[in-house]
Image 1: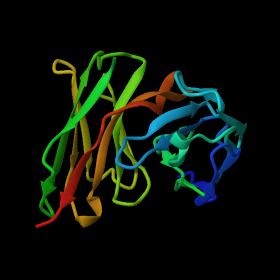
Image 2: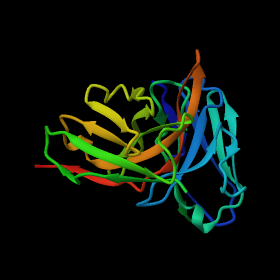
Image 3: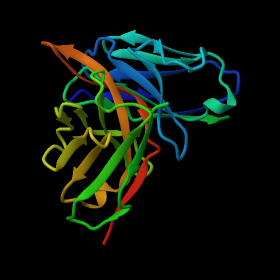
Image 4: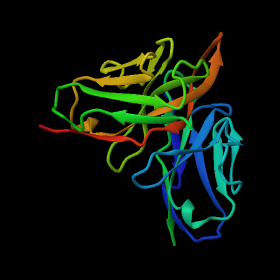
Length: 108
Length: 128
């Protein structure tokens, strides 16, 4: 199975900061990567699919990039509602879909 | 607006079978554009894909759970279901149902991709 490694696992940031989360696949997955945001007690919410396509209704401050094995999620100007845990997910390897371990973004 | 709702027992005894149902409203489960499936999240941990099913009945399961998992679909009720047998405390988790977009395609077949609509989740505890 393809292993997805996110870094960092957690960090603190301030409102207005530009933040970047990294996701690395153990083997190439082309652009078959999605990003999700999860808040405590809630289901995950799809932010980005196909590595860089913004899901409808998601603010444009979120962006994704990368292909192959290395991917990034960037939040250009962190808002209070963005403090959450973020997960990447690959959907290149069938029949096994896998998630990264998550990155928790906390308030500094 | 498409909505998914999980239902089933919140407490299951060790060695028994966990059974959950997901009811889809606001859209048809018989769409050829999507898979439907389950993801779980143990307390304080990350997300784990359990498996997915197409309206035709084609299924894909996480290899680590495959021997214990069965996912089925009932198009007449617009529902799909999960059965996980021989449960242990390690199966305690929040279980989510979700709609899966088509992902990687090869040889005329497309496989489960990313999840764009999720249920709210249901907590299942395995304990005697």
